Length: 184
Image (cartoon, rainbow, N blue to C red):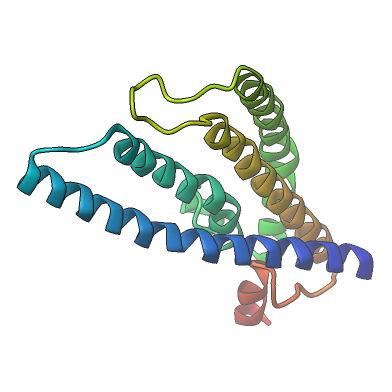
């Protein structure tokens, strides 16, 4: 059990660090948009690479933050019944949902996005716009990276759920820890 706990905690910490780092992309995006707006307003000009960089940063925020959002239970879920479930029932829902929905879809998205990005890399895909960003395959590989982070966090959630079902208290890195503290 301690090996599973260490694995889950390592995944939690990985997504925590990457999520915190990705949050700084919001600041970078905001500054870029401010500069773009000022240049458009005062000089009646903009560059294709600036607009593309804006949507690349926006995409990276969500892609690299997906595992972080899942870790902190900020993903989309209907909480009408879940919020009232016991810790054990929540563990069952998380376990079954992770195995049936999250893992298969994350694996599918990883495989498809990797092939898509690899093709873009092989042909040296860049922006179709003159003055746009080169190496468009980098943002396409970010889709794969984001799904890998989400898959890993899904595995950590499944491990946490299994451990709760075995009667092992959740670690302080698990999203179930707070719930356990409130009910314990």
